[in-house]
Image (cartoon, rainbow, N blue to C red; front, side):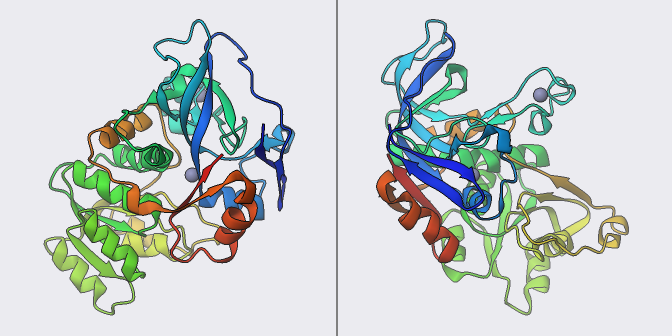
Length: 344
Ligand SMILES: [Zn+2]
Ligand SMILES: [Zn+2]
């Protein structure tokens, strides 16, 4: 089969004769990949990595935001049947380490992630444990399934935050994960402020239900944000921009005693005055990937029509031009791109 394979720093190759996946045990399944979306993390890994990929796991098929159709199931593979449309729960937790046993799967020390430690979905076919393939309703367009992984990242951060209906919440950064975070927060009953510097992203935030939008270049943003949060400041602020200055800004927008959830991944080291945290008794929480239950929550919201990923699909390309039209485009000219989907 054809597959986009990660060999190392600045070295991904389209292989035309990569071996087809096979069931490794009777709890596995094979899917035909319908769509895999390219994520900024893939580009980071290609340009600046390996960060998460262990060199001993290479070469490895890239791609971790995957949806497909079941074409083969092991005889002990639970409830799946041939033809089921599924999203790939790309994170396998060990369920036996100290962290898993404490219910903190997001910090699992033996975590295996598709496209990083195990072969991912930028390929025609993929093997994966059947109990990590989540059924997607037939009424959902196939393309939308590829956005379930970033939705699970949003669900993970929101579930960790303990947000309650009516809370004043801000999302700093309206890229793909930020805009999905806004949609999930609205489903959770929060009062949502969105912050970004790009007017088209703020328009989408509004379309997705944000109650207030703020352009970060606006000089009166601090007063306006305060006004939008009852003069108190936001109860919870999600930082999804990943830029060096975003954590400081996000902590500033958090009320005394409130929470800042850091979801961005920082390629440049953020500058921080830690007294911003200490003096105001704020809590700062890191959130990465997903834990058991987060992706199921995302699929449920998608199946119920509470999330609309369609405006986040910037274009669809084939595996033949995944390097030029996908990876290089996102590395050189990411402006206006949310997700590029690959149809193998
Ligand atoms: Zn991703
Ligand atoms: Zn574990």
